[in-house]
Length: 272
Image (cartoon, rainbow, N blue to C red):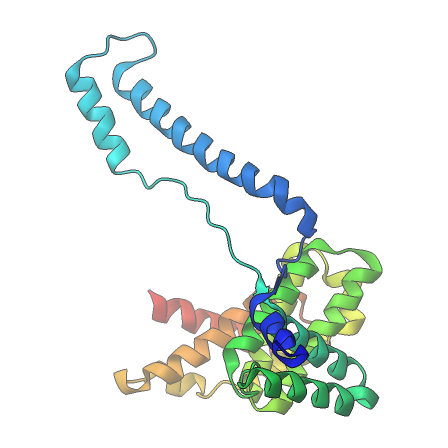
């Protein structure tokens, strides 16, 4: 076997843990997860039995049948392991992030990615216009942001905002998608109590809400007179309204606050 074949097999068959936690802890966390699922199932069975017979009641066939029926209608708690990512995918992902972080080395990173893909004989990276990988990437950023504080929180927020702009430049996100992502992200930071710490990294809330309302594809009058054929436009309209609604109490411009209030009333009236 040649060194090139060994390298190709390594990229295809070797795997790396990308779950985001210490990979050494898996030897404890996996058995712990299985025990937790089994405990929940046993607790559900005990609860069902105690409910139908009482703590010290007699065990008869009728009570056993009722307990069995309750257990049959209860979905068991499951535990599922996820396999690690192939080494080739991990290497190309790391090279891509390195190229995005350092524009001077982007050409070198791109050449290395192409070399790995040529060795494997197929493309590992999805098309840049494919939305799903960008959404998964933003979800990973959101998970990290919920766990961070201080300077690390600010660093992850900066990366997350830059990721949305990269998706827009790649053609995966439209201006509507960018406005929706920014509004949802600001609302999540407000909900988690992080907005004050990173407010200088985001656009002002008035500017953010104004950008969202400018992307609404309908006017208030058109939304009131919408027909069934306009269902997609109505969905896009109220999706933006729902995203910026949590920010309404923090707006400074009274006219903008009144405009958002009108859209919120229309959304509630339409939902009812």
